[in-house]
Image 1 (cartoon, one colour):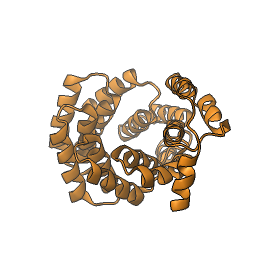
Image 2 (spheres, one colour; image 1 turned 30 degrees about the vertical axis):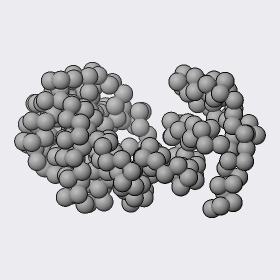
Image 3 (cartoon, helix red, strand yellow; image 1 turned 180 degrees about the vertical axis):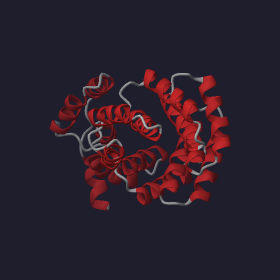
Length: 264
C-alpha cells in the first residue's frame, strides 16, 4: 500500500485546462473521447484525473473498469462520494453484498445522504434483508421527504412487499407532484394489477408509455396484462417491442410460450 501511495502522488497532475476540456466532453456525452485523452496522457495517475476517469467509466456503463479504479481511490480518499460511486458500480453488476459494504462505509463517513440510504435499501431488498431495507427507506424519506426518487424507491419496495394500499397512496402523491415519472406510472400499474384492477392498471401503463415510449418494462407488464385479459395478439405485439428495446429482457420467452399455448 505504501508503494501504491508513493506512485499515486509521484506524477504531475494534468493541466487544469486539459481537465476542463475533458469535463466539457463528459457534459456533451462524448465519453469515448474523454476517456481516450485521459488514458493517453502519461500524467494520468493523480487523484483528480483518476476520479474523473472512474466517473467516465461509470457513465459509460463500463462498471468493471470503474470498480478497478474506485477500489484504489477509495482506500486513499476514504470519502463518502467515492464509496457511494463504488457501490453504484457494484449494484449495476449485481454484486449486492459488495455494494452493501461500500454503502455502509459511505454512511459511516456521512450519514446525511438520502440517496445512499435509498440505494442501501434497494440492495438489502435484493438479498432479502427486508427489515433492514424498510428501515433504510424510512431514514431516506426522513432525510429528504420531497425527493421523488427516494419516494419512488420506497413505493417500489412497498409494492414488492405486497403492501399495496400504502404503495398506492405514496405513488398517488408522487404522480400528483410530478406527472413525468414513468416509473411511478409503471408501479402504480403493477399495484393495480396485483389487486386485479385491470382497467386502472392499463390506464397507468398507457400513461407511462406516453412519457417513455421505449420502456421495455412498461411493454412487458402491459403484455402480461393483455395476456391476463385474453388479448393474445396485443400481448405478443408488446413482447416484440420488449425485444426491440431490451433483447435480453428476462421472462420474455416464458411469457411467449404461455401466450402461444393459450392462443391455439
